[in-house]
Amino acid sequence: MTRVFNFSAGPAALPESVLRQAADEMLDWHGSGMSVMEMSHRGKEFIAIHAEAEALLRELLAVPANYRVLFMQGGAIGENAIVPMNMLRGHAGADYVNTGEWSKKSIKEAAKYAKINVVASSEATQFDRIPKRETWQLDPNAAYVHICANETIGGVEYHFVPDVGDVPLIADVSSNILSRPMDVARFGLIYGGAQKNIGPAGLTIVVVRDDLLGGALPITPSAFNYTEQAASDSMLNTPPTYAIYIAGLVFHWIKARGGLAAMEAHNRAKAALLYDYLNATGFYRSPIVREDRSLMNVPFKLKDEALDAAFLKGAEARGMVQLKGHRSVGGMRASIYNAMPVEGVKALVAYMKEFEASHG
Ligand SMILES: *Cc1c(COP(=O)(O)O)cnc(C)c1O
Image 1 (cartoon, rainbow, N blue to C red):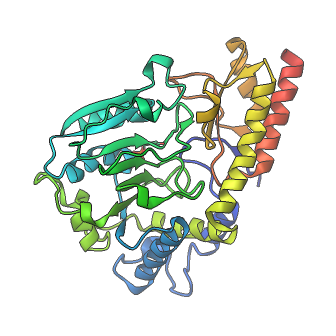
Image 2: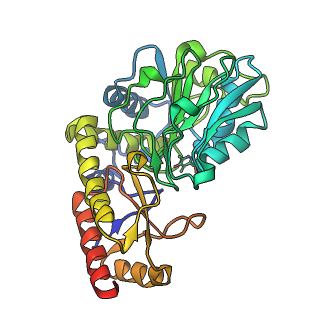
């Protein structure tokens, strides 16, 4: 068996030890005589798996007691609609910051339900930065302010929590949740799909302050109504049971490695290896301003894009896959989530240097 270094943006690499444990437990989970996939979601075995996953997530993120953790489905794109349906709470509109492809999708979807006010945008500079907070034109009557905490395609990340006063701040954290500690109390709600930094696709995580519940639009489907899901412990319908189980194993893995502070050190060290090299060479470049560069998704361009195909082919031959940038931006992108070992990034930088030496 050979495992590659998988730089996919999502679904993305998982810790090998988690996959091994899942394999060991595949046919018989803890003497139950069943796979987790075969269990009733209301049986005592799965209830325990579910409760433990939630408890570990709360512990890792230090979620305050007045927040509900929901395990839902529909992905972050589903949440782009589910958030306004639940969070307008009688307000006419909401404020959105546009920092790239994922922000644009959120804005487009939310506009079906509410008057959306784009309060700041970095589109004029090809989404190479986070617009400075001082430039945002916030509406004090907005239902909430929405940001994308990490633009997975563009590679820009908030390295600060914007102060938006008393209006609840909502963040799409799909691609940087659990990559470092975050102060959940600064947000009204955070949401994200699991398949970047947590586990298999199919599970969507929502953490919401409980005083914001109860105001969903009447058209909101029950399965997507936060209040109803909170009241039934995310079991209003059958939850994505296997994905929740794997997420729980990943939470254990993070805890065993020292929690989110240790994850941050690990992720900063990996990102520094790549960005230090990108800063030093003229052969490759990062399109993002230094202070807003993502620790999770590192897009870069070759000086001569005619070499892109040869670069990717050589990487694949060395066991490094999924480095092609998103079709909307081109170039390369290395996604280096929690599960990417430092050895993978070292191998990538060594290959980039070798490729520069032979083509530069
Ligand atoms: C991947 C991603 C999404 C889309 O998630 P789906 O699970 O495909 O709905 C949305 N936002 C961000 C920031 C992402 O990285």
